[in-house]
Image 1 (cartoon, rainbow, N blue to C red):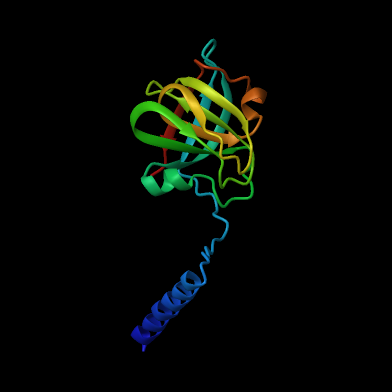
Image 2: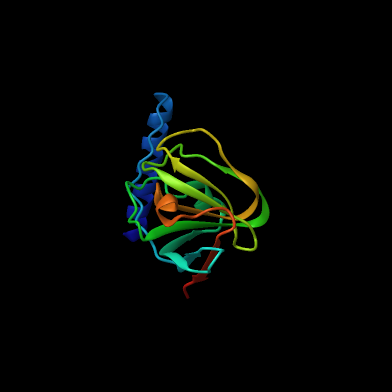
Length: 163
């Protein structure tokens, strides 16, 4: 009986997909993605090592997660952020194509130092927002927080993964 329901679900999905393709439509059904705390992060001023922010982070470290990022979310509390971790250090570029709220995008090198910041990246904007040099990490926080915290190139990040 269980297998019949699975087969019916697969067949229904196929028929809906085929019908949409025949009409030249593409239907993507998504629901808002919720935050999953995967680590803790602190941002420090380079000049005096003072902590300017402590954040709960979600980590994006595979192809799907880095491509999706904060898409399909309406907002994010100011104590949360998304940390992208890449396999190699090189110049990177992000955009806001399917992101629904403004962000500050912080680019960091393998020494956990801020290389550059793209401030107030606007929702749904397809403009490329490049780093000013080679980076291993990208941290996305709500727009205007980097100014509020007084962050600048050379300031540092430290983070730990839960588990």
